[in-house]
Length: 230
Image 1: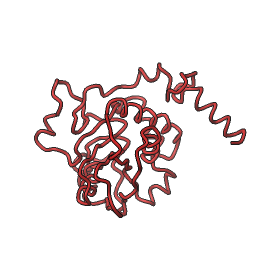
Image 2 (image 1 turned 120 degrees about the vertical axis):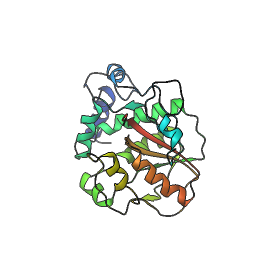
Image 3 (image 1 turned 60 degrees about the vertical axis):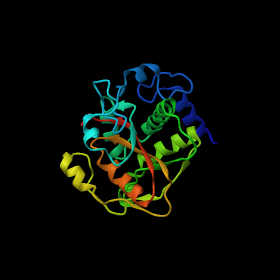
């Protein structure tokens, strides 16, 4: 580790990445910024949409269940997340993904009891899109969860078909855009934690889950950092 690496480690571990003020040791962000994030306190067990009643499942999932079996998103897609994700998806400010991944892993593991039969998978990008952006944000989330949980990682899910970006598309366009974009290469795990960044209509997660289940997966938890009340 050289001097530059030491400086980066000290900077990342002493100051909050959102407000640049000192933060508590071991916390991804300071307590003030953490308390100001909008929590998805009560959510549907199947699709993670915010609930306003005591039901465990939303009416939409009762009528038509998603392809994945359960879902969890600790945050709502509200300030400051929209502006941060806009920067990230423009290939700027990817450092914010570190605290996001830490928070996602901590929140998920504190609320879910998992066994070692689960394997973590990321929603893949098309190779050209990943080269243009320079990284896949969901891969960073996957690595953080793997480090904290000790679970394995699978990269059997691929996206060989280039599609339009989901941002800016209407609901019907999102569903049409992701009919058959994902394929599986090799053996898939029976139990999967499938990670994406934002859960909006569920079109991406459903399309990926469909490919995995056709290939042999039995149980899929859709895990995202935040949920939009779409």
